[in-house]
Length: 318
Image (tube, rainbow, N blue to C red):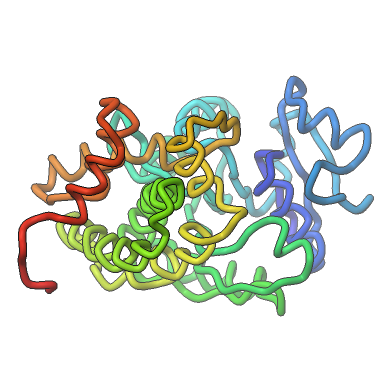
């Protein structure tokens, strides 16, 4: 299968390496101005992995015209800008696979909605979600992930083509729930990092339990299946996001509490704003997301806010 991957950061480069390793013809596209792309062109590697010579590298976005499948791995808030560029190419009859986890802040759109709003009707859109870190996959540590789409044919084609001993894919059954759950787990990851920063890691079990219920309520209100929150997109990704030393969102939360600088992208920082907007629009209370937002954006005292979160009024668990 001919595949073009858009996005030469950590995840985009890992996807490129992985898809090439399972016998696809893969092109990695990155902007000419990208320092990541410049390094790949010069050295075929970054700080995490080395790409084989069989991978094609391109700084011309027209390269997507030759691909059957176009995989996108960029900053979720920059997806609309990318789609504006893709629109000018008048692409038809392609499968677009989104590998990011986020919600557009300004509109509340799920990322598949952003893509579909900008593509010709002949194109199909899928999402690739679930747990796993670049370093672990590159070192041969397997995991399970999920692919979802409104098209059953597309789901089957991608799962059959992309599955291997390294990644076992499941067929997603709820595009709304999978996208919201995947985005929201990054917010829970930041909250977990904040608990680590205060030495309250033992509370992460309660955070996971209540976080899943919170997200399940939102998914249900939006028309999705609340059980999706308990699947690979959300609860299944907690080990990688809430506990792992490799988790950017957890590390960001911990660094924030300790007053340390953190330069890596933590998608949950942006997603929490979108979550609060969705909660308001759909009439769903989101106490964990609200706490994270108040700490990050309202400069409220983190210890006080987190303490209030775990000493809320007594109620039934379910």
